[in-house]
Picture 1 (cartoon, helix red, strand yellow):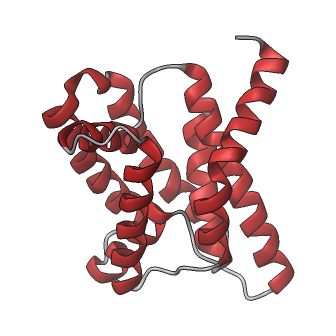
Picture 2 (cartoon, rainbow, N blue to C red; picture 1 turned 30 degrees about the horizontal axis):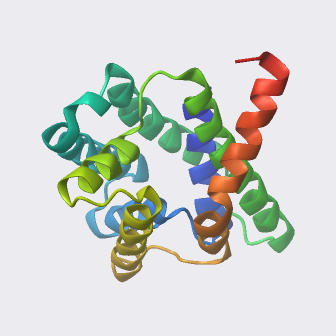
Amino acid sequence: MGLIFFGMGVSLCLRSGFGNNPLGVFVTGVALTTSLSVGTCNMLNGLFQTFVGIALERKNVTIGTFIIVFFGSYSIDVANMIFPVTDVMTIRIIYMVAGICSYCLGFSLQQYARCGLGNYDCFIFGLAKALHISDYSKIRWITDGLYIIGGYLLGGTVGLATVILVFFSGKLVVFFKKQLIKTFGE
């Protein structure tokens, strides 16, 4: 379920035209320059992150990590087929808000399920270990920044959704996870 919400969130933010999460900006830019789908670019990047994670910190990578890479990427492409592109500002704003919430709920569900780390976290923890940086948020900010810059240079859209996700996605993920625990227990 988490991967379905993740894919819908990425797709809705993309369709809103108001930017996307840092990695979404990058994979969208790659998709625009290669003619591959956003989901395929996400999968290729996810595999890259996973193999870097394996090389740097093998213990964080599980079968769940690979499931996340493939199913999450596929769900982006399916959602892109479902949600139409629109010029209606009200619909675009609804897409953005729903996309941000769906993206964060997806990550909350993934964490709640405890089936292993996602590829991005494997990548971050591997880099943190290799660079001897114990502050997860510092290495995450650096990689997010590089993804945003690289994606923007490749034609990805940076906008309001990008800013909101950079600054508030962590808090929204924690909020949704707390609600899941309240509702369904540990």
